[in-house]
Length: 369
Image 1 (tube, rainbow, N blue to C red):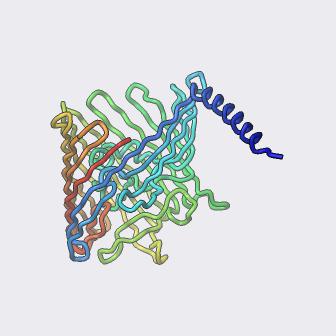
Image 2 (tube, rainbow, N blue to C red):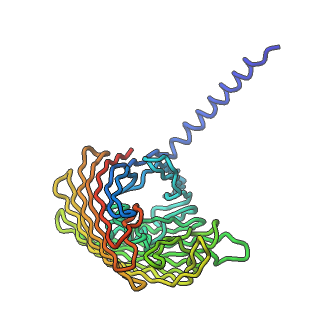
Image 3 (cartoon, rainbow, N blue to C red):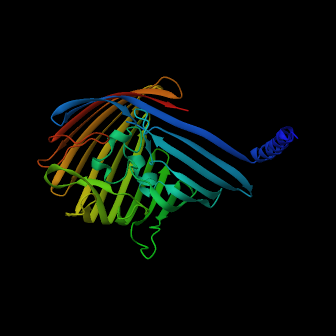
């Protein structure tokens, strides 16, 4: 007795039913597939006493793909979700450096989300730095010590983001340690606010961590800090406090911005060896500008001074970005960093320099879909 035709008919009926359900759901919800690919070439000097030529991935924005959607729940309320995944165009390697979350929002009360998310430094301070804006990844402050380039996202986090009330907005985040009997071991919280009025914008944010990097299931992974004798180490930090303030003012097609941040790390240990390392506080002072020379061509540049731990760093950068279309642009940028004696020089995304200086000249193409 042949039963395959019946099985096929059942599949057809089920498929038709699902199609009808999907059609009904689509009237109330929307899902978008999107992403970005960023790749190019870079010359970097003074790496292991040699020049380095390499294919790059993500000098402005890390390459990624994503899905986001919302469902209208009525009464001004909606359910939302966002799933993103980073990767290297050059190698195909995947990175856990993008958000995953689900939540609820209203038109008047704001949004509450749960998942792997950006903290308040990213939301309210980073936009006043060039790494958090047009400059992108390579323009980060040394070691991205203040997380303005969002090198790390908070796992196990609950986040609230307000609506805009007369130019004022605010938000906060709490990330759980998820460890039994160790509530504060690798937990974090942050708060921030922004105010905008015409051409003027200002923002401030604060981020606190306990036991950062101590566990693999907590809020944050280990971070990079300067070690002894000009080295760079992966570090666990028992107490970290980071705060930043910034402001910008637009004059026609030119926007001038300034930013200050300070990251205080105490109870530092080498994540690889377990050895105690000296506590370190790093302060970053940045001034930057963006000039929209033509509708297609934008010029940007910044200067950053960082000091702390008996060392200091100077970094200057320039960038030209040209739109070939609404979705595709090409860019050329150059960054130079000089460290004080005995301190490591390392431009973000590069290997540490074998001396006090490092220069990078790079070009690339970026496509959004």
